[in-house]
Length: 451
Image (cartoon, rainbow, N blue to C red; front, top):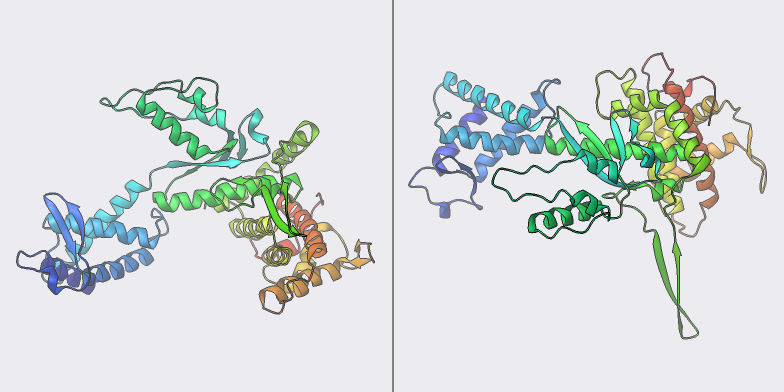
């Protein structure tokens, strides 16, 4: 790294000297505003920065604040520019270069730490209404109704800013007249646009991650939590109707156009976002409460919490749920089978059809020759698992399936039911599992079965 730093300083001295002309340089000048002006970077200087940044990123201790490589390089450029402008980066002998390295590392870590302060990310979402009687806690993640969320947020007003009409929260919910002053109207419009038609907000607090990186992690956790709730509804369609606003979801309202005998036909299909009520609401909330310990472990593993007892298993279960959820949301039956087959594969640690059979048989407490479906003819668990893995997932992903008219509808339906039950039981057993954090533990994780 010492040689790279020396080259960086040489490039900075060259392009920031009084007599330098950019007409002799390839590419456009890049600069960072610094006290008293700007610090310019040539393309060679930026390459040096990238190499230095990659070295720093790969050698940072595990306990340091987390940041992605490209974000670190961006902050390194700002640090190098300011340090150069203040005369802290100068060429010299080995001791001088190492002193420059210490300065850059200290300034960089301070900047990363400053950007890694705790921050709560909010994700507007459509849900089935579990949060309407109060916040739903999934480990450190909260699902709140829009009205409860509004009670928790405040807008900072500086001493010289125009005041904000306090009725803006009621106006968002349609319970008050819309404020007319410019600042409140602007705020109201921004909040309404951010919420869209969502009925809930998922709140995730992240600490120890640079802000851009923390939002990526928070998004993963928020989506994971909604998928857990959808899994506990035990209805695959819930994965379609419940989700984060910023995610790619199927349209709920579709129209089809066709022509027959010279006349235009217009038809359509509307899928509603139903709100749970009565006994169904209570049943799902009871499952959330019963599995709270397991859910906390899984969400903690996603958020890299240090107190998770089986982080590898929890992360494996979370990834399996992700693929299952994407399979349930997938409109194409063949691709859905491939995704759900991948979920099975992850849960069994890539142990192919035999490993999937062992996993499903263990968790469902069934023999592989047990009859799973009786119509149009009896079919065993072994046959279905082999079909889902070999004729479904493997043929589709390995390029052997090319007949677009071949139906995978029945295989998808069975795969969704089997995988959903398997994931629910494995989540329950995670709560009482006390053995090694082994990647194939779900193949032998015994316990009282419950779907």
